[in-house]
Length: 432
Image 1 (cartoon, rainbow, N blue to C red):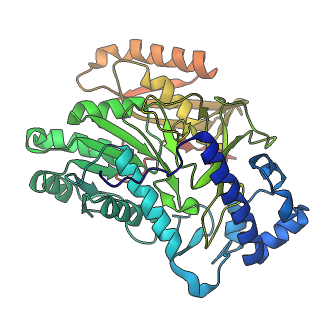
Image 2 (cartoon, rainbow, N blue to C red):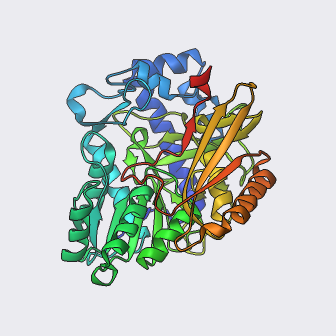
């Protein structure tokens, strides 16, 4: 039988038992190894022996990205330095980078569950995996590559950008799987069509990481490349890196690796659990992480748990694709809007492409105004602009309860990126 990277536990009861033991281990390990965690738990009145079941997780204090920034350069460190074999850092768009330490076992665990992603996506050792994500101090390149090699498929460490090389590799190496951001996936799909090489390549699957992708964008990529599956891979530096889950071939939600971490979905305001199926903030607690364990770490990412069992039969629970981040929220005329909601509305409208921009301005009258720029779909005539704009404005009003001006642009005219595409331009702060 082929090697499997799936969990050793077979039932939900076994999974709960594993999580309970992992939680108790993490609390003891962090308390005894990290002055930061010891103080945090003492201040919260946590007695180690009190954590007897998964329900007791509510007694534990939260950790935030601010804790990581204040603990720079080696935050949350719970092992002696001689045990640390590597560091990774987030791209650090705000303030100091978040730096995380790894022990040898942390790297092995990450490699193992990343290999599980490739198994969940139905790869075989025959596959050739073009890894077009960032290498260096961030976690993407290392994670995708280690997991691929552990799984046993051929890794092609291409890195991001460089369309000439990417297209040459697709053709010459007959790549079957490509790993990249969704924005780069669209860029590649358009480039392959522009060069007329679709019939010369052998691409069957794409794995998208590091940014949310709309249904419209995914459909566009699938249609342009004629591929079977597009998978979503979540991940963040604090929680090892990418590879902490994947949607299976049924695409009914992202299976997350509950044998490596506990996922709570909490109301970002009250920090109490939301009912299953409702949207809230992802809060994670690691079960095996040695160098920098996470205890109730507030990710700011928004999603929901998906109830019931997946048709694939896996016992691993599922969460939905990320709606966005609680700190991505736009407040426009007293309405809370997430870019993911705009994605969702636009994905349901025929005749437009997947690329859009949201532009917010404050005018002399003191009021806020929103413009949504959207590309026409390939081959759609400008004569349809008025009708399309009316339809988009109507759906945004109906579903998100705000009014905006719609501007239609030529297909391919909005910027593409091989990393993450910027979609929200809020000029209101600058105007004040």
